[in-house]
Length: 287
Image (cartoon, rainbow, N blue to C red; front, side, top):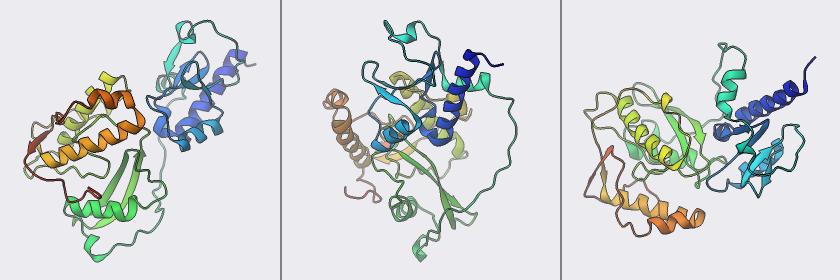
């Protein structure tokens, strides 16, 4: 017979499983406090995220400044911060300890919709081609939110013919990056880059260091071990364009941080980039 403790934790694990399947973009931010599940955001989540949290049974705690789910455990008035006397675990750590032994799974890939291509986009050889594809088939899709970072993989065959694309993730807040660009910017590797994966790993490590400095969670174990020593070239015009874009968003979302960075006229670029004279990239719209 199950004890009340076992049943309570079963409710917690069930909720975490639903959160991972239905809202994977924020699952990694969840914490288990005692048997409750807490979610904290550095900036208020968009309306769609809030609606989904309420649908799952979360409620906003104005005193704690976080979203909470009791997981069937009665709510008692607490003196002080519950995290000071209840055990606190990240959701992914609890899953690793309490989940059943891992098992391989069989998957199938299915096409979701057709994306007609004009003659000019059937072959993708330049960042401009990729940006045109983005504007045609990603930015026009209902899931696209220009206020969030959106990662999409464009799939090509060996002859660089476009086969389709896949949405990888939609973020809930701005990533701490400047020159890396908004989600639609294309990162082009130097012609002599022997290992594109190493260049990407070098970029992500700098993002990880900044995320840690700001108190975000960023799993560095998923970044490749090899690091590129090369530099990617970017124009000064693009750097300043990205800086203005970031300041506009912070002015709406985080006034304090906006005021903190306001005196900075020219920001330091991501260490992977070498800044050269030049204008804003052609793929930017409304510049």
